[in-house]
Length: 469
Image (cartoon, rainbow, N blue to C red; front, side, top):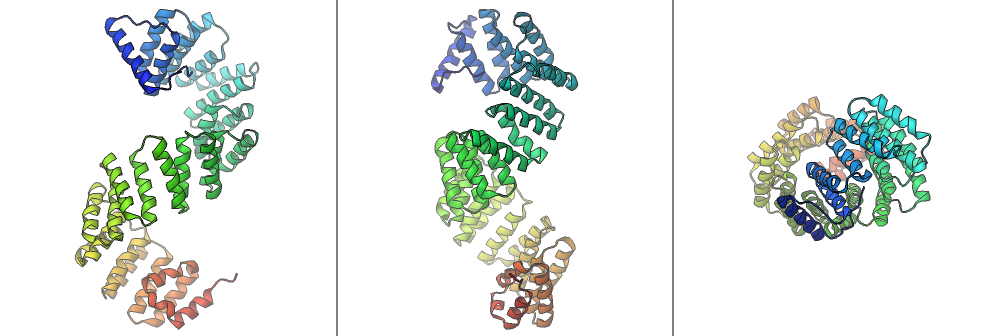
């Protein structure tokens, strides 16, 4: 029940100050009943439910019986998980204003909160037949909330779907739909439902947002980006739509477009560490390491425990070959999150840049041990040993890797190591095995040994396994 006519934050703070003064004098009385609603709205938004109830209490003292204040009181008591108290208030409403839809809905919610789910649903069923479409949509939302508390997400999805069929503009149904779709795994059905809604109402921002969420889950990233764009174009203060659109752009490596969305968030809304971190990632991927570092540093200033920001600062220094600074910063990331294999591998790379091979080996080994199921860090460790002509140790590492992980890159690495050792016949046989497992991954061999790209026998073997188009 949004009664607030205040858009100016200062005006609200002035009202709060006036209220506090009245409390001190024990003389709470406003000329306009609407001011009570403004205060209740504010305290409810700030999750200060006791203060909100206090204000409602003063309003009832001044005004006497007014349905809206009693309904607000019941609603706040439900938010506080006090259904028994809420029922007492609802009984008072029924005495003075019988037959209200809100009363029945709050009563059903109270019953469900007390564990009487069947009785709550039965009450809702009993009032469906006399309800118009908008009212019926509200009833379905309450029923969906009961199924939510029971964790019956598929039933919740279909009840919310019914709510939107009755009233496609029901914002509460649309808001609850985005997360139940995730739990119920109804993404294809969600896209179909919400596309029907936007056909009739092209500026329904929440419907577009839900399409974007489902298309993103289905890996239809371009469709997701388009839907999120329609969402924030329809509602220019839709912060989540900007953020989600940017996140999908990051997945598709469209860093310039992601940056544009994140900049919109920065200009329009309150920033946070994640925002600064993601803007930094865009600049890092675009090769602007100086600006990227500035945003990562802002993330650290916002959240001193943001290990990921320290990690990215270290990577930026590494990309600029400022190895000592990279090591120093990556040590901070590892101090905050020591079991992150990517951080450990990154500092190993930085120690290679410095020339401290002993430390590099130590960290490459630790990265592999922290995440033994991932082949990438085993390959890095083996490749490091290969570059330092420790081929037998590299082969031992690959043997160990195959006991813990699987991936074609392990076979390509073994082939490269055998080539380095001069065992060409076995290297080619291993290459054949790797190509059979995953032909498309064969460029991993050339990253490990670029010289092999020109080797005639290697090229011949690759040609044999080349898939037919």
